[in-house]
Length: 383
Image 1: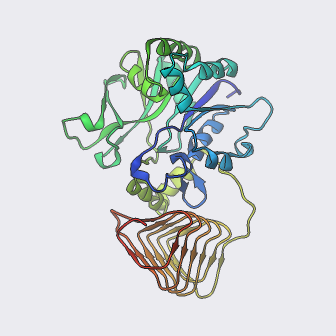
Image 2 (image 1 turned 60 degrees about the vertical axis):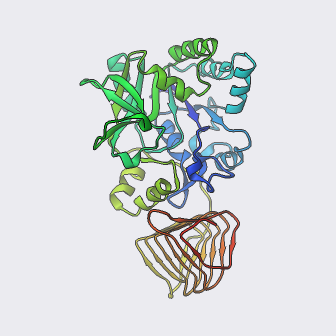
Image 3 (image 1 turned 45 degrees about the horizontal axis):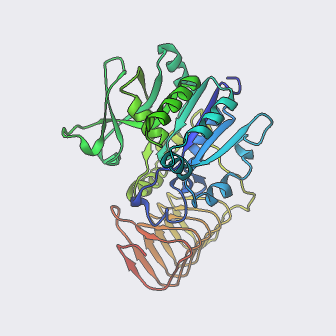
């Protein structure tokens, strides 16, 4: 596919209190995933795999440092090449302009015009998936729809209260949309909108012009959700791996899913490559005293203790006699001799003193905040 046929808008402004304290100082999209990735890698990679080099990213004010730290100059995703174009906008700036009666989508409209792209794809920030945008574009063109929305059939336990649920005609045209929490009828499976939309760029520019003149929602995702029942919208069914990240439990489960080879290979080793920022580090070193089962490790770790069904990020040390089970460990953790962890999520730079126990449950993993120094036992709560 030639460059500039599509551009992308990444909506990173949507946040969930259910993910606190992990998102206290970072956006949802930069949460660690599977030891070395960030959630935003999957939307960016889907875009790059479709030869998209023109990206507009919507961020929240005061919550962008980790985005810049991870993206750098965009080299890994080809966003630093000649002809590529990145633009960062702030959601609060859109809200301010709307409150002042100014054209609040003007920056986005300027980006879309400058991109010279025939089509635009919009990504929300919490659906962890690996989509083939070229296939979605083929369907969009074949049916000459105004909007093509990506969906997946999922059980109710995989849906957030504010998620958009689609009711479809037999030919996959969107008949009705509902907020999940407002639905009365129970069902085994629901058509969950994945907040991925493909539209013609000229049509989107016109929609944004009309929307800001009529006081439409400042969120592009909300605007497109509303528009699905007002115009010809076709739904594209995604059948690959999906995790919907909206609370601690869903985040924990998504990481633990990667210990299942089928989920791991479907998400990370399909024909669609997943790109993340590379770091040149030494390999993880496993001492003779280590005992490792069904776990994954990033680079630079030192493992002397026992690790079972866990995911361990870069530069973590697990000392001899320590036991880590059913846990997600972010980078630079220090787990000292005799410490015991089960059903725990450790944010960056956590130090667990010798002999300390951290014990959660599968339904309520214990979350240890960034830079914590744990010197006493913790059972079933958050630090």
